[in-house]
Amino acid sequence: MFGSKPKRSHIELFEGLIIGGSLAAAATFIFGTKQGKDLQKKIVDQYKKLGRTTAHMKTKIAKVLKLHGAKKIKRAIKAKARKIKSKIKRRVTRKAA
Image (cartoon, rainbow, N blue to C red; front, side, top):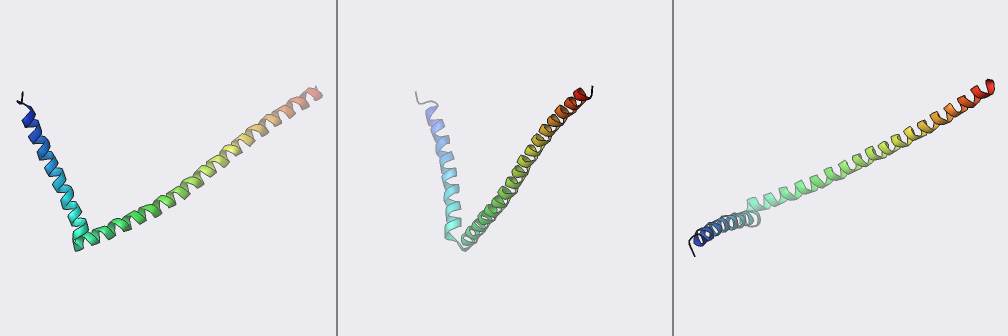
């Protein structure tokens, strides 16, 4: 009845202790030491830099998409113009014949 249950329970306990200990050590390092304060500053600086980079990329992508939309419209206008031109040519050739 308890043959495999305690073994698994010990493994889960051991995993929990390792994960919990690692998180506690990281939290202590980040919030408790001078190096932790430096790390906090670096994290905040990197977060702000990431925000600026993301905003810059968003602007670039918006420009590209806008340009892509303009190109799409340009192609549609050219296609319509070709159709109209071919209709005019057909009418002119019919009247000439």
